[in-house]
Image 1: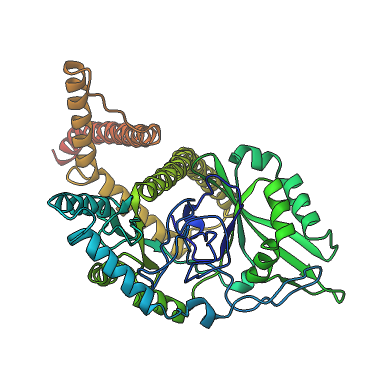
Image 2 (image 1 turned 180 degrees about the vertical axis):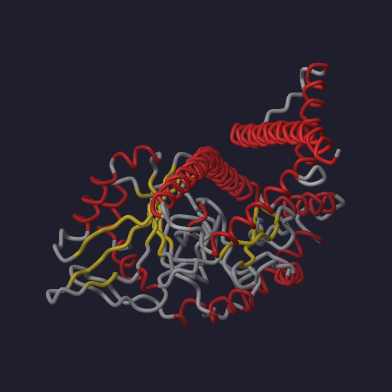
Length: 498
């Protein structure tokens, strides 16, 4: 959520131009206004009409105005094909301040008289009138009568005694003038704008003179409070030699500010236009050095000290409930957008988690297939090697390998080694099965591949035991045969010696 300190302009008859986070708008001033930071326009400092003057670097002594803002096209318009722009005010003119010492002095004296010592009635009722004037000054509205021969003091929300003031922070734009970004606020809903985006681009191209060398592009569309929509556009100018460049933001904004062009934009529903340009360090310094009208310099200095990020944020005054309500609506709108984005991210994360689970299952399946294929390949190699070595005597390396395999087999069959561990594992499995029967809610399962390996190992053990039993039986038969032969040979030898 960020304000843009670019130039701003609005429709002359717009009832509620949106300030939004796009920038601080400018408002139409009367000829008696003594200061201005921008070209005349019809929005308040924060983009709302009917806000009184909140210019920077002025206090009292100004004629009644309807507000000036921070944004203008700074520098001079450079002009480009199809545009007939005029020179823009220079930086010095923007921030220069005419001398108004006598008028300000009289205004201060009249305000002090209205608040402390009015002489309108000449009796004790003047004290009551003074308290009433103080109440009006605190509220920021009404007129303070203090003398029959002097016009009453007009109390506005910009007066130093108004209590409904605060200082907030807005994000400074980081877009350069060369980026050519200009924001147009339409008094339409986002769905309508998106549905008619192509027709809108064509209409803007016609407003630019239907120049074939110019092409209007939409940078982004954003929803704003009060069913308004902000569209950020830029114009690309193509030269005959094939090169292209973006039209500077100040130049494009100056073109849109022409009276006939502004009328055409109003017919399209545009209530506010703003050049998305960043403030120069000199401009930021100028704005920070001079507190806004009606803001206590001490509070302004404290706001600068409390700035959480001076490189990106700048303090801005908030005067009155209308501005507070506008910022609340913008904050609520941005919160909804953030929540919507979080929901989208959450859905993406859930989808990625599902994909990850599926991928992990496929990986495990492929691992099992790989192991199976490896075993099958090994069996094929064994058979091939047996056929290749058929008829040859056992070689030394093969004999060594056989010895190693026998050693491994002995280790596997050793009661205290793997065989004991296998027995322990089987005991644990039986215990788990027993506990599972007692507590049906706790069930444990063995992986199918591991169970197959256990069965294969037990089968090999059984085959080994069977082979060992057969050898023992053969040895017992041989022993009996030897014993029988020895028993038969003893009588024969006895007859010979007798």
